[in-house]
Image 1 (cartoon, rainbow, N blue to C red):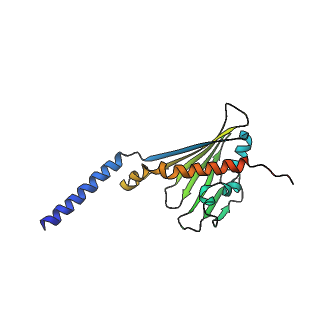
Image 2: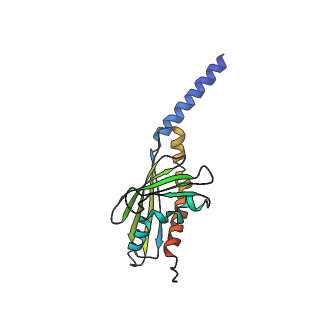
Image 3: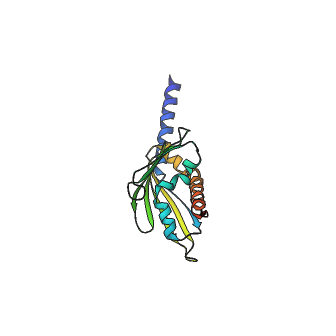
Length: 182
């Protein structure tokens, strides 16, 4: 009986220590990536504003060719969304435009199995050339107080960063592809 009590107290103490350490880890994770695109800022912003074309470059949709994709009725103003359900049940989500200003599109990422994240697509003119534009993709995840979630937050940039890089590269390829004349 004494060993059982010692085991229970040790387990409770370990949980308490891990919880306290977890509370010391920041409660939000910010992930950002950027890409240079050979196109004018206005054309890049127009392409980014219209969710109707997001299935061409969003990494979660592109990775699953069998994904079922749904768009809102209005596709280029606040409230517009793209929703997908992949063949793989883990691959599902919705990204909704919440606001648009002169060079920034604010979005809400709702990815299956993850907390909602506020996001930003920012279009910045290149200082070197009017035909080059930088597109920045930022995500801000708010983590719950659970110790395991806070510890997972330490690795979020390593998990989602490459996904954002791939999405931006897909977007770059989509915007830069030559228009075929008929």
